[in-house]
Image (tube, rainbow, N blue to C red):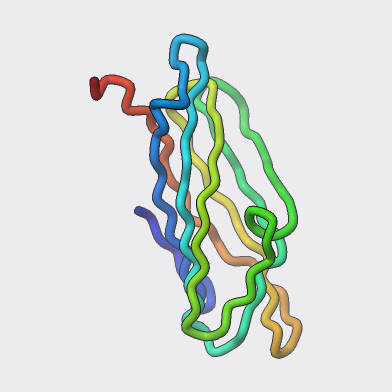
Length: 128
């Protein structure tokens, strides 16, 4: 698990290779990642947008941007936590991801960028 803290907002990510959904011989590797957002700041916040940079060892950089996280724009009071699971596919068995959230402090409307720490995507295809 990797963690980053920006202005009192902690983002932790844990990735898992999904062997049962992958086809290494067809260059199809599936990963899931669990993200935990914890609000340790004194302000109520809302996650408005996300931006992911996905690096595949066998390809170029892929940028994914959009509103919220998995169809939601969660509001977190001070001390609250939001957790979700998502996934990505790679053509190689190795890569990495990192990104940022656009977060609004609802008290004053200030927009901040919250870092999503870089994490590795490594297929453990030799475990069997």
